[in-house]
Image 1 (cartoon, rainbow, N blue to C red):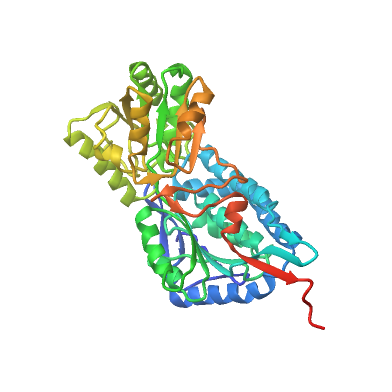
Image 2: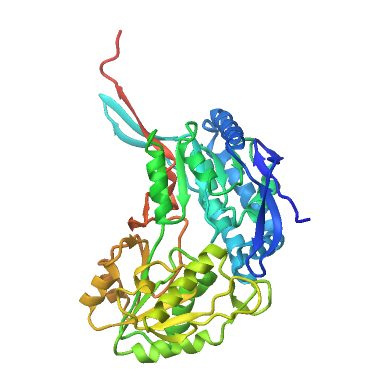
Length: 475
């Protein structure tokens, strides 16, 4: 029988009654079971968070920091166990899983240093005017399956550091590592401050509409984000939405193909392309297109696709069957339309696991589905461009605006182009770098609000203004 994992509610590890199977995407075998929570379980978790909030909202910065540093230290101390468990449920190769676990520990430590100090607006003979930040209350956090630990931590830690309490729901596809961390930290944070419950996707709307949850923080698809925004509007919950992206990378003619080919590959194919800020459209100047596209294709042939637990694997499986079928559908659409493939395009019909071959398309049209839609898989369309004006227009021609990149031998030129892109983050000669001290969020339909940095911390607070008239004190 697969191992059964419990939920964390009010400092205790608890069951629910019914169980959900969790599948290893590398072999489609059940590797664990988690509670299938419903309304009653959610009510218990929210009640625990509401009770804990009465005390936690008055905690000191030092108390909050100590709790978050304990989470960071616990994750780091148990990293070897956690990264292997993460690979088994998510599919990413061991080195990438290890990077996520240690990255989550580092993120918790970094964000525990963030502090929202009071701002003195006026201190004169007549008036003292101060703005302070107060916690929103109980937070409902909903986490996706592509980076379950990193994205769980980026919701838990700012909630605690702001004085809020939280009820976190992992994806039903990847809850195991999160619940193992919950077990490890159960006695390291005050009861009720962190509650973690699991369930089907149907649990999400119950969280969004719960009357005792004051804020929703969600990472996932734009379509689901719109539903959350609609559901949260009933009682005007505060919301932070980090949604989809169809991120464009622009390679200028002065970039060296030999130097950037490998970096461009991993900007698209890390975590099998299942990253919201992965390069999903790569525009290469026509002067270097042939050389660079061939260099990327040649490098792709050296990368092993396989079980993330096997030595040498660079690209693991798609995490779940639904997303696997969607990626195959996009590839089939490209084949049906006669687009040219530099690599990939055919999947191995034998064996189990949600494996998609590394697939690179050669200059498909701008209106191709593989270009216009977010693929979220190991598929990369390469396109030619002629002028800066043209490529900026093409890059911005999207409902999304999460991130982008410019690759060039002239960083100043890169910045000049970056400032014309309609995205929340633009990298120059790098990719996938996020600072815990800088805001991260999308433009257009890629999100609402910010995560990371002081801007992200403010999302968990209200501003309260205290104004004292000094020369008008009643006798």
